[in-house]
Length: 239
Image (cartoon, rainbow, N blue to C red; front, side, top):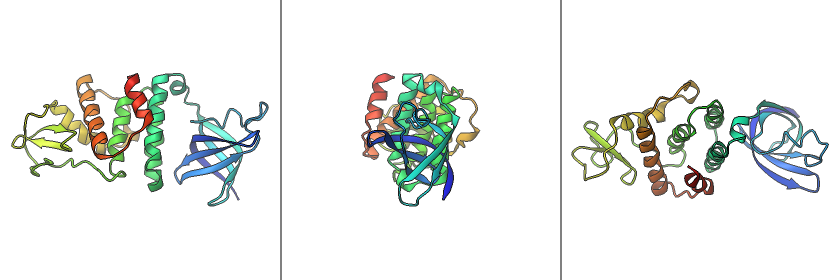
C-alpha cells in the first residue's frame, strides 16, 4: 500500500553498503523506512534522507515493519537552523527530549514539536520556544507543574515566587528566603503551558524574565524528571 506521510527525519542508520534506514517522526509516531541506494553519489535520496529533513514522504507502507521509500517532497529545508550551530543545538535538544516521550505519541505531540521547529526557523527566540515545549512535555513525563496554587500549602493567592527545587509556586506565607522572581515570570510560566504554539507570532519578553523561567525549568528538570540528555549539556555550554 502506498501512503504519504508528513514528517521529519530524526535518525539515520547505515544499511548495507549503499542504503540506509531512517526514523521518520510523524503524527502517527516514529516509523522506520528503508531508503535503497540512498548513500550512492547519484541517488536522488542522498540529499533528501539526511537527519532533520522535513517533508512529505511517499512510501510502500508496511504496518509494524520497515516501509520502503518512494519519493520525498521537501516542505521546508530549515536552512536557517542548519546553518547556525546554536539553533541546530536547540533542535538536537528538542528532538532528543521529544524522543523520551514519543512512545506516548499523539497528534498534538508531533504538532507541537514541528510547529516549534518552524517557529525557531522563522526567527523566534529558540530558548523561549524550547521552554514552552519543556513545560508542555512535563505532563507526558509524569511530573506536570501545579500552576494553580502554592506547592507547599495549596494557597491560590499571594503567590510570591517560584522555586525549581520546591517544585513550583511559593506563596508569601510559605516563603523561606527563596529567590524572588519578577511578577511577570510567575504570570508567563502559566502562559507558556496554556499557549497555542501555532498562535505565537512574536515574543516580547525581557531578558531577566526569560532567564528566570529558563533557570527554573533547568532546576525542575534536573530534580524531577530523571533525564540526562547529552544535547542539553552541550547546549548549556554553548549558550
